[in-house]
Length: 572
Ligand code: ATP
Ligand code: MG
Image 1 (cartoon, protein in one colour):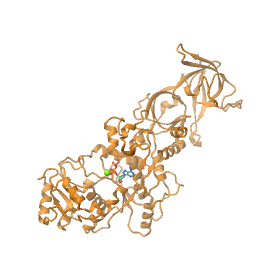
Image 2 (cartoon, protein in one colour):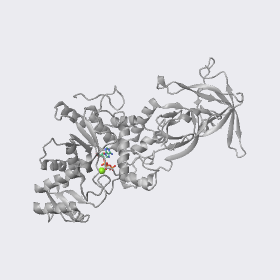
Image 3 (cartoon, rainbow, N blue to C red):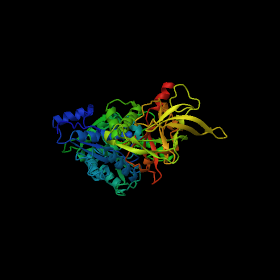
Image 4 (tube, rainbow, N blue to C red):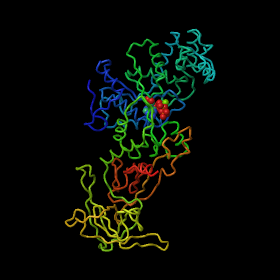
């Protein structure tokens, strides 16, 4: 296939994105350099994936998809002490979710449930190490890690560098056989102790770790280093374009050196680097996210405030929104911080198009319509989604006693307050214009009830509905409303750059990042489904949380309708 697939993130009409990596790939396709483009996404299963990984997933799977290629999901599992099957499973789930809808024949996923494992290549990688030793290009070194660092920094030769091939073979075989304790010795490449690029100064290839591995069990007590395993895994899988983030640029000469030193028969993979994603108001490192989880500063890896893919999913963001975001930010060679508002914009655009509109009152105050018959229920017609003509309508019950939003009433209104005030009028959405006649208070002076009259000729869509008032507010029938727990999420950090100037990110956690309330919802929300998205009109977008039980819905606020932080910034 020579022309890129133009069906991008979601939209069949949108042009395929272009960037310097896709241009390289397009050139290679034009030259027919490879029989097939083959990429991979290689996470280490030592934590949950975050939105930075989503950028890499969209790039690697996206390229495979656009150029008729294949993309492998590979667990880069060469460090047994940090890795766990829990992470393997979460990674599979997150990747499947993110590329769902892209799942077609191009995907290298043998099946969504079957990723590749670098640890499946341990036998072959071991054989490659033996080959390097036999070529005099690797040696067993007995120096301590500190000595090694010191020697490498000072461009000094290891005293073990000139061991004979026979001695190296013997020692390496015995390393594998478990004869030595952890740290006793390592296998190092024999390249150039004075190379300007420090990664070429006889880097480590293998270390001893007497540890159970989540995938290979107790079979191995030596494990290859990332740099050795990665290029060889790429080669073994037939990867053509090995795409990673910029910090690996300095490793590329080593990547190329290892492959070139082995005189391999097949076409070699090449490494390309792009700028990693950093987002404002969050942190993006598995290790630091792990700190928030283990110190219980959040509820778990899928806490909706975290930038993990599982957290973002639980919050109610769709894969389409995340892919649209990844496409929008593009791929460059320059590190920078992306404004989280860009992500929020992508989420709002997506949800605006798909969300079912519903009426719900988050902080209720009672309204009694004194001229509306007691015991009467009218079913009013409401539009499910003004963005979707096929979305249809539903019925909402209207009665004499209603809930409205406390914020939509002001006893002493500020200027230009077009909602409800004493003696003032407002329209109830899909219903009538009402007028506030009396404010009822308890002994402590708290408002307990607003006694109003309805203009019964003003019914929305009715024959005599022409009269207009400035404000329209949402409501719920008190007799019919269902209670729902609503989790109002906000940004996790109060500062755009939580780690600015070496600051501890835990000192700038937003104390108001979660508020839990009970809302009064229109009864149709009793049938809310986890896959649907909702807009509580005039408020925000919501999705059902997995903690919900039958009759006990819990809604997560995915995002507000407007950016409240931008308003704050303007005021400041
Ligand atoms: P972290 O530092 O957050 O733990 P990592 O780089 O160690 O991330 P890996 O599991 O090794 O995580 O990453 C898998 C792939 O995802 C790599 O190719 C890596 O370059 C890419 N990746 C990781 N973080 C980002 C990011 N913030 N933006 C884009 N790509 C990323
Ligand atoms: Mg890593």
